Length: 206
Image 1: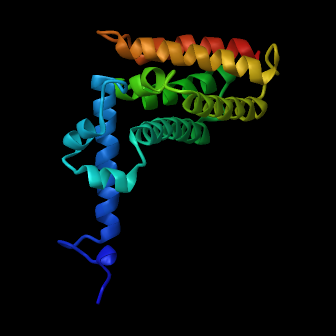
Image 2: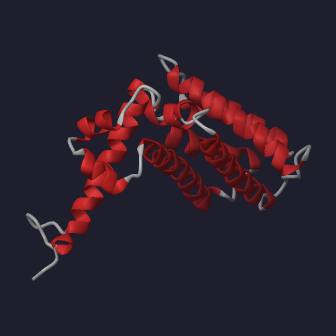
């Protein structure tokens, strides 16, 4: 007899159905945490938004915190992937052009959806020591990416204070500016934001 976990249902495998449930919980968490705030939300809220049960939630996530961290990590990974994709086709221009390409990719990936910006810059902050350590590790990953890209660019130099401190300063500026931009109505054009961030980045590297 075929195990329950591997049976097809309406032409979809168990793995496909589970992947769909997980995606629905991630989308529901993004909506609920951004709209209500993480501190004011519950697993029940997320399940209601997803149209799924608490049992199904705990099959995917250990608790509400693990869902939040998963969403946060996905936002960060999407932003890095966007930058790496942009650089793969635009690394041969001037330093100014490469900085603009990089910042456009980041702003579009994180700031185009205000909910993603709120999770990345507001809801994830200050929850507990464990998550703060996780955020620090993410910042270090971004710093390493900045250093790797900068060292490969003609005309770039080691920034004042070294890459660790300069990277932290730049990441703080990026996060604060993109968050503020995402909340402003009407929003200024992306090009304006990119000009500001590119100017800061080029100044650090030249």
